[in-house]
Image (tube, rainbow, N blue to C red; front, side, top):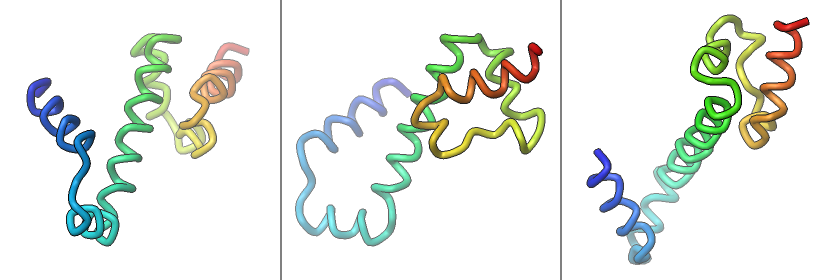
Length: 87
């Protein structure tokens, strides 16, 4: 998995041709890749701060799902969800 991920990242970093870029944009692949990267950063940040058990609170209720703003600022999600649960 790490090797495959590295090869994809190298390909993206080297720059794709105009046709490839246009197709990815048209198909929404660039947006999907951004969502994956943002989600990965959110999960890593939350797990570092509160551990996997703390992260798993995300699944306990629709109210504990992160907002778009919280995905960009994971500490805000941790503060909201863990402050309520720990109060």
